[in-house]
Image 1 (cartoon, one colour):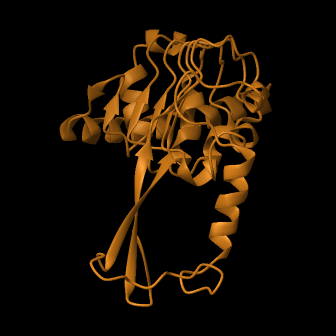
Image 2 (cartoon, one colour):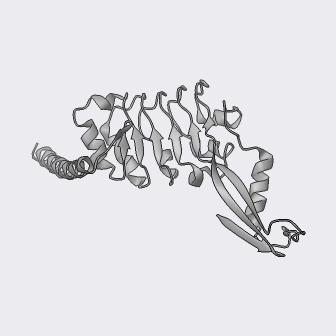
Image 3 (cartoon, one colour):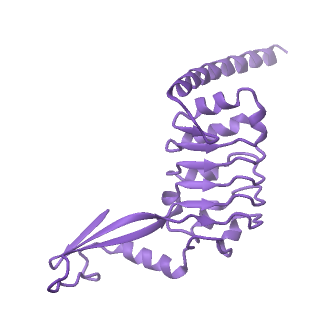
Length: 233
């Protein structure tokens, strides 16, 4: 919430979530196509709105370039403005093999995506790993990656650099068939509250964290033993 005051009038700006930008079922093969593709629903950022947002960010509430008109008789002394910000993007059911270039592409779709994006659906594509590009979205809280082609549990480790992540889906990837899949993911990502649309209880989180800590110790010991064997051979 932002409050501006001038000439006996107050303005309160409330920020609300705008509807998701929906690029699902678009047969997208690269993130760069977002620059020219129109969403199924939601409001895509335009060049005009981009310039307006940048100009507004440069002005302070008390700036003479944005004066507040005096209150007339009978008018309320406070005006409430609601500014809608897009925080969710749907890219599910496309043909993406990589999300390379996604942060730059989203600059054409919503303001400041690296900070504003909180919910991202990239399920049912052809992604094979968790790419470093995802880690640039520092405020991401929900990430849907089910129905892709991720084969290595270690790919999940990258998401440990996203402490705000609360909800994750990975079911429908080859890694789901691994018998330690759930305990590994829950243990590796301590911030999670839901995995594959299933709530993570406190007991499950605690047990998984202990298991994962032991797993790291075992893996370290195994690497050391393999190094010794290689040195002896």
